[in-house]
Image (cartoon, rainbow, N blue to C red; front, top):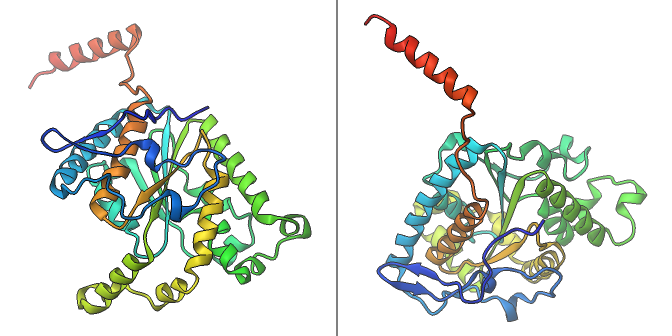
Length: 312
């Protein structure tokens, strides 16, 4: 059941010409059941003491190639699916990370779903229902840009969102957040048992860096389209969101679906960390091209003979 990713303390990522980024998977993974303090445990500006941006981007490009090769095997073997979930505050770089890390993947084998505010139809169904519809099939990579985790984040910070769901007493009473954590864990365990590998990335952005990026979007006309007044409005709830993120990370990082807290103040480092985790996870599956049976080989040889016998 445990996701077999190398969390060995000695593991470091090789970057550039013999250099090393001094961080390990253990530095960014959330240990199952352990209390989380984003301020104490995870630095948004962390780069492992490494500042070779060019070298890191070389490794990102290498990881993109690794993902491309592994995605072909994933599709051909048709046994597993990969689901990558991204959560973050606004301007943390989710879109850019997805675009860069998945740039080498065959578009036919990958699908990105961006979860916006639920529709009236969504609100009349269980909060996990629209996620079911977007899950990747075997052999595919699915990416959730935001996800069902909004149900324990935005909905928790804004109780008025919960009221719109018109829940019956059994679903809405008691400690609804603890119950939803358990429901999500069970949902992800079901997916993992049936072949879906789940990697969850929380892009950990500092409040100061968010401010800088907001100002850049305002000051540059070409970036105006990226800025929404609602983004700045949500900034007022920063502390509430941080508490909600901590609770979510503590209660839903499991052996079968771990959370990775990605330092997001430096986009190059965030992309390096995400691409390295995704590459390592797929490589641990020991994927391979399907082998042809003897009967299949004989059939192909017969077809080959027929083709060669045709007159040009």
